[in-house]
Length: 567
Image (spheres, rainbow, N blue to C red):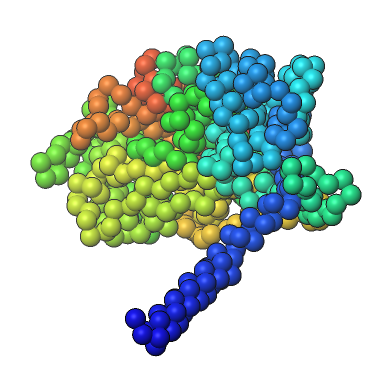
């Protein structure tokens, strides 16, 4: 091999070696710089998180519906442990779980205590003070505790659906789910703080080393519109009503018509938000905002209000097609009791809850106007209520409506909405035609400021004169309709019963119904609007014999509470 060849090979070797070194340096300094910096940071510093205190949820009088109670996080400082992880795990496992989970718990603790890549590991969240004291009595070196408040519910679990609960996200951090906890997660959770200290080669903090940190910022408190007395009344009455009428489930909602503020909201069966993990996940969503239903005859007041507003009918207009069943396409539509009232007025159509009479009204209004008004009343769109899980069943596009769809919608079948949508729509009748956004939080309070949430007016759906006419028609329905036997004497109540068959596998189940009653009182100057729904009552399928008397039982107590005197 010649000298030139050897020189060239040597130069090539140095060139390749230089390129490899340069490439490696480029990888370390550019591509992997962030990872290497983080690794150096981890070797030099030890970090501790300082949890923020989650904001409270308060009733309108300032009493806590959700607060925080004392609890502790148990953790292990791995470099300070003197005993073997297996021994420590066996000692502390019985304090953490039930007997049937003891072996799994012990194995989990062993795995955590054997971690080589961490300085400290969490062992158990939200221990009581009593359990903390028992663990401290074991005198295990390296076992420590940090205050970690947990959610507490002074008013019990009756408000679970409106409150939601606090669980853990995929990173093991607290997170609000459902209800107010989920909707106002950013306001409630606050901002976590941290403390960083220099550590030595063994991982122990250097006492005289540098300390860095950022103070935590506690979450904001929510002041709701919920009236605790109203909430207590509707919970007790609904529990009693479900037993009395043999219903599978039920809901009661009470709002203030002039503002849209929710005064009380309860759905049963419910769950305990402190032990949400022990309950079926299907119970978590609030039925008032998340579940749709066909409202039945209660819906007639919206269609009638639209027809009155368009002046296609007047209260004294007589039904020319009310002498018997109506035949539309391949369908025959009858009244609920197969009784007919020829030449009945519009007042009497609502009083008798006449399906055939409502078809007459809807046909006068027409498909386009009917769909337009349903949209104006808020159907097909969320109400905007501050609950995380609100849903909104779609409103069928106008071009897809047939005459039979118009006919069935006139008496509340074949059309779906949520209870809170029904409350919002009928609330416009109670509020001089003004549509208000329902809401549940009136103040967001922090150390620095108080942010007030004002009632939100959305639109004038019907004229004030129409609202007054419709109110009088609804008062007459209460005074002379099927539920008149249960009405408290001396009070002017505007309301309407509803009984809707439940759609099952493409057809309606004749045995199963959703019974409801919606109304407001006093009719001339409403202080509350209330909707009662009962799913599958067994004592009677009719709203006039189940939901209506329950509504009146609740109303009697509200009259006393608000100091409303009979006329």
